[in-house]
Each structure stands twice: as structure tokens, then as C-alpha cells.
Length: 117
Length: 111
Image (cartoon, rainbow over all chains, first blue to last red; front, top):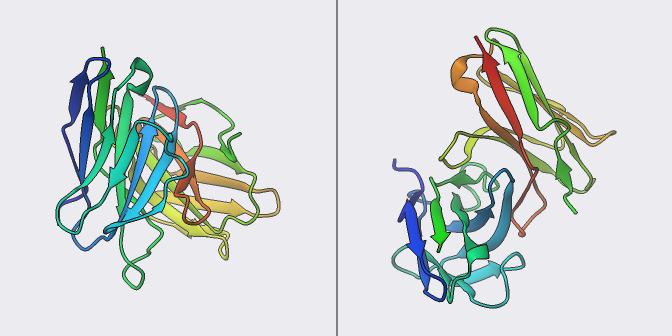
């Protein structure tokens, strides 16, 4: 059973460009979370999604950032008009639906390291 | 501010000794806690979890203790090995707003 997959692993963008980060949850998992991690810091929650539905986006900046988890395909975190402050590692996690395993346990992907020049 | 925090940023232990990493939380309503291990350049790896209706849980070489009275969580690693070198985070699940992470403790294993 493959774990959470993220791509690309490394992404370099110039200021003003768009960044698209992809996340495929573990097989059978229906909940996806996105986190951001700055160097030497813990992860900060951004958004929680289920298929075709944003459950909680309280940690996501109001502008330039958006996330989706379509019926088919991976979850996408999109950052428009990137700035240097967006440089960070972005991690995706998934958790199983209620009734399977522990629905609160989140399993993380390897992350995408975004560098904005 | 952070509701979950760690007492020490770096912990250095001798190989073979036991390690204890501590964590404090402030939200008494939190009911689920997880310890993660993160190696350089990798994502957090689940180690062990505990619910608030328990005060101790054991895994393979690891034990998590929860003291709800003082809102304290600890991770004990027995017979520390070089592969245990990593940053360890405690995380708190308070519901739909995802996990709240502390800043992490860097565990260094000395030969």
C-alpha cells in the first residue's frame, strides 16, 4: 500500500509565477490536509479537504492560496503570484474515513520544497 | 500563540541510553495526541498516539505518557539507536482544524 505521494518534490519559481503542488492520499483515505513548514519550525495547518469539499481553510492565507480535492485525481494546492515569503516545505497528510482505523491519525507525504527566487 | 510546545530544542544522548522528550499543551479540551519523527528532508513519520482517556501507551521501544492534570506529554525511547536521530514533534488534534504542532526537539545520538 503506497503511502501519501506528493509531487513535485522540489519546485523553483520566480516571483509572480504560479506554483501547483499535488498530493495523492493513501489508498482508501478520503481526508486530505495541507501544512506548511518553515525551516527549524513545526508544521502549520493550512486546509482540510474531503472529496469535492473544503472542510476547514482557517489556516490558509485569504489571498493567492487555494486548494481543491476533486472527485478524481490528486488534491492540488495552488499559490498564485508567489513571493519569496512563500518559500517553505509544503506537506500533505491523509487520514482514513470514520469506521476504518483511527480517523484522527494523519499520515504525511514527503513534502514539496518550494523555493521562490 | 502555540498551544503545543516543547521544553528543549535539542537533546543529546548516548547510544544505548533511554531518551525522554517532553511536550506541554495548553488546551484541556484536546483529546488526541500524536508523536511524529522527522528526518532531514523527509515528511513527519507517525510514531505513536494516545487519547485523553489513557495515560500511557507503549509501542516498539517507545512509550508515550500523558498527564492531563499538568497538560504534559512525553515520549520515551528505549535503548536509543543512531537511526533515532531526528526532530521529534508532538501534535495535538483538536478537531477539524487539523493538527497543531510544537516547534520540535532535535534528538542527537552520540556514539
